[in-house]
Image 1: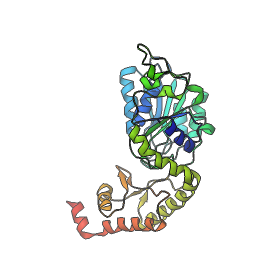
Image 2: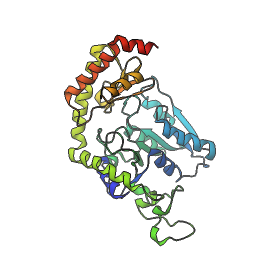
Image 3: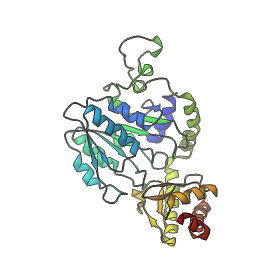
Image 4: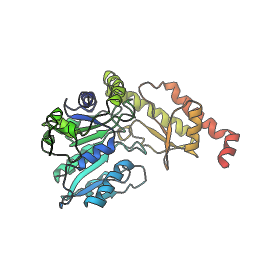
Amino acid sequence: MPVTTGDKIARILGADPGSVVMHQNVSICQSLILSCFDLRQKRNKIVYEALNFPSVMYVYAAHAKVAGARVIEVPSPDGMTIDTERLLAAIDEETLLVPISHVLFKSSYLQDAQAVIDKAHAVGAYVVLDVYQSAGTVPLNVKKLDVDFVVGGSVKWLCGGPGAGYLYVHPALQNKLEPQVTGWMAHRTPFAFEPSEITYAGDIHRFLHGSPAIPTLYAAESGYDIINEIGVEHIRAKSVRQTTRLIELADEQGWRVNSPRDPAKRGGTVVVDVPHAAAVVQELARREVLVDSRPGAGIRLAPHFYTKDEELEISMREIKNILDTRAYKKHLAR
C-alpha cells in the first residue's frame, strides 16, 4: 500500500508509477533524503529560503549540529516573498541539497521551481521540492521539472488527512542512493527476515523503512481519487477565479493582502491581514467558517473545488461583522 497509494499521488504530481512512496510526514521524508548523503564532505551546503516551513528547517538545523552540514538561509525582502535571483546566487559548487517550498505556507507565494532546479543541477546539487501547499491545486509535472525529490502531505489540498506524507524520488536516483534511515520494508526480500546488513530493494521500495501506517493510507485514498477525478487543471482554474475575488473583497474593506496579486505567483490561498487575526479565526470557527491564521501574516482563506462563490462573500462579511462588533472589540481590548 505505501507504493500503490503512492501511485495515486504520482498521477497528481505528473510522476511515473513506482516513483512515490508514502510516509508519515514531510519531516521523515526530509530526514530520509538527508541520510543518503555523507555530510562530512566539502559539498555539504544546504540552501533554502528563510520562509521555509519550520519543521523542515528543524531537520536541517539538527543535522548541521551533529553531522557538520552548512545551512544557508536566504532572507526574504519583505517577510512574504523570496528574491529568486538571491536564492540562485546562494547555490554554488559546494551545495548538496536545496530543499524549498513550492508555495510558501505563510503567504501563498509561488516560487519559480524550474529556475532553482536548473541552477542546482548546473552546479551538481539536488533539489527537494516541498509541494505540501501546492499539490492538488497547482498543476505539477515533476518529470518536466526534472526535480530530484518531491515531498508533501495530504492535510491540505489533497483532502487526505494527517499521517499521509509522500516522497517522490527521481527514477535515475532510485538505485544510486542508499538511505541510512531505513528498515525492513526497504529490504529486497523483507519477509525473508535476513539478519545483519540490509540488502536494498532495487526500486522505490528502498526508500521505505519500518512497518507502514496502513490505516492512514486507507483514510487518505479517497481524497486522492477525488482530486484525480476532477483534475488539477480544473481545480486551478476555479481557484484562480475565487482567490482573485477574495482579493477584490479584501480591497473593498481596505484590508491588506499578503498574498501575491499576480495569480501566476500565487498558490490557492489568500492571506488577509486584519487586526487580532488569531482571535477572529476562533470566532469564525464558532460561526462554522473554517479558516486559519499565521503569525505576522493574517487570516488564510483557501477555497477549494467544493467552495461555492457565495461562501466567499459570507466569509468576508463574517470577518467584517466580527471586527465591527462593539462587544467583540471590548473583548479584544482586554
